[in-house]
Length: 119
Image (cartoon, rainbow, N blue to C red; front, side, top):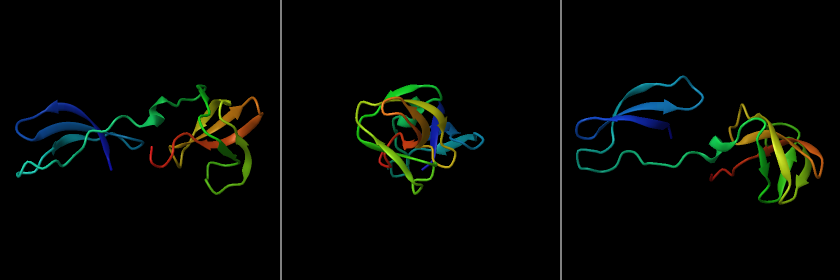
């Protein structure tokens, strides 16, 4: 679905919003409930990917595979054990859940998933 930020509350069921994402932001009004008072939208927490930035350090929480390319089907470089510290070198372009990292121990560089498909 489309993520957006609420800018203002309008009359009745109306909200002024701006879209969030990789595309140019779009601003406008939408209804948050139907005429029968059923929800049309749902509040969500920010994507976990919002905390991942270039040069930030993170600890591996579960065994994970490092791959040569951003593509999930690219060749495996190695597996990183839980507790490994990684530095993010680049964020994914094709997939915002992917990041190119540098690990120290074991020494490795490649692409990992920073969150699962389920978030």
